[in-house]
Image (tube, rainbow, N blue to C red; front, side):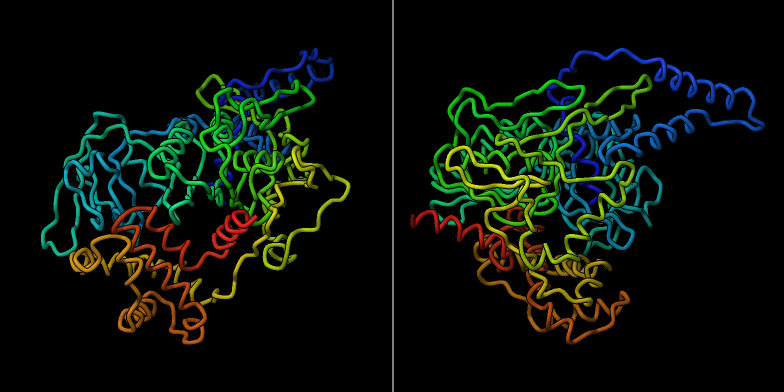
Length: 529
């Protein structure tokens, strides 16, 4: 959820210069008096208060409190946080180029970025970083890691590494460089004619990544599953470009309107779409937000795709980023998003109640919406799709055409505690520490691994023992209930470390993902019509 909170605010006019204000309203005498009042208080505190005052901190807290009494998405962004976010939006940052986890207070390298600084000097998956620039980095907190691994291009960082199977520590000197970020987690063929693409966010490179996958890995397919589950949004212009790969030239994708903002429309480019006629299924869930909802809503309204999954997050407020003089910024909500049929994407909220707003997902679960069936629709907000005239509904989020409940049959408290304690991840790291060469020899490619690998009884025993050592008592009933889920997660994590994130997705999709199965079934149903 933290990722969603940070990411969904990025969609808006500040990204593409899209919004223009309506005729400026003159400041009233009452408003001018309130502005003066704030200045008076700040002056009195700075000049008359008994002790030394950290005025910048007070100002920031006042801004945060003020915006917190508006809608849930108007936010203040500090200068340092804004700098990091801008790097992520632009699709690159500067650092050493690794994917990492923090396991038992130690940084563990998951993979090195191909062609990046760490790969060039020989850092390997499974290495533990225990020292940085001569300072011990154990224990370490997850949020602290980017602070000392990222840095300006050309700067050098000295790492001390513990490598499994090597007695002595290893020292690496790494020169930081630009590291490309990616929004495409996976792209592969399910069969000869059906492709799958998963996007985790919308950044400056998203459309290029998608088009490259369609032109190279998936060339010639006649059906596509576009997975936007868990995708919290990103850049508006990228969502429009992505939609342009599937809709006809000049199609309306989304429009905005607000009290102080003229209606603005975003349409697809005049070029023919890259995948304009093939069968399309879009996967969404309760964490699909903002830009993801714009795409899902446009595909549904134009009858271009079947939407499969659960009702989306419901983030349809437009933020405009307004810079402040110290490098920080305010992202202020200025308009609402509407789908081509006129539906507002935004779900209801109470001003100043941010906690209540984000508790909505808990309410969906408690009410049975996520597990028992689709949400009750608001019959007062009925709209028609633009081609077939099907009924679709407003009121917050995009309702899928095919609802798939969360499958909780394999959940258990035992599984939950094993995940929270990091036992599954630690088991995978340990397994590859001791047997990576054996795995590579036994499973020379992913296809062999996917077909032949399964947890042995001896491995399950070691997993249970590790759990006990980490404070998770053995639970035979819980293990039995969650056995398939645990086995799938471990298999997927091993695949990710031996190959890449695509391998992880292929394992999970194939072995234990009812939403993916429903999407495949929707493709098959379309084929038979």
